[in-house]
Length: 317
Image (cartoon, rainbow, N blue to C red):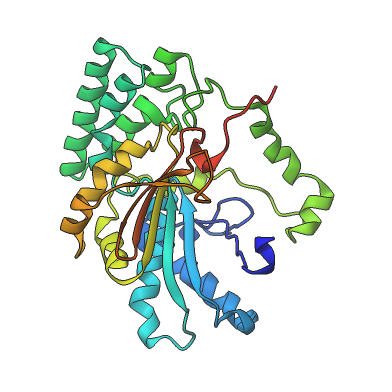
């Protein structure tokens, strides 16, 4: 198994997410600088406690809103490693279905939803008008107002059922082939409450947090871009951006939309790069996905049977 060759460190991030906690409101991150700093401190402490792992190649990975967290920790390591007492053998990052550049990505929702048949022409126009408004707010640095547009339209964290859910009748924005989330997605919280599970992951009686307080403190940050930091990483390290074909909230086409605007050294080569068909093994009949590569940058679209988190579409009932 891969676990015999590689080590994986899971971190509940930002502080206040999952089993991580703070006793002071000042402990919550308010921006990606805070996120990068806190993660860096945690990783350095890990290597202090377990120095045998320090020599290993280190990659930061995450998905969804970690499209901002991952560049944040990557850039923080890049900036601090040269003078740090404890060096991190940082090699690169991987981001899945990442919300990296809200302004540019926001503008792609209307056409995407229309092309996959989730909205009609009248609804497409409404979505486009709303995303145009959200982009205007971003350009005016009205971050909270921009988030409210996004939340009312698609996200639904603060405002109840979003517009897209109301007009489609579907609540699952991780996979547009399944109208509602599979039942087994509701088991996660109950699983983490089991004594044997808590014992195995060493969390004792700590409270499991849903992240709502974290989101509240980051509300002014959510609609900001991370492109400048991502560009630095793409110029200096191995970077993988991958998308499932069926995700709605951070669709593959939205990644395609923002990537050409990243100001890195090989932007021109990326725009001219050919996309190739990817199979796990050359003789495999099934396509695993599609790859575009420039230097140490890889962009992958996973094949049509997968949505968010690479979950294979299958009947679960």
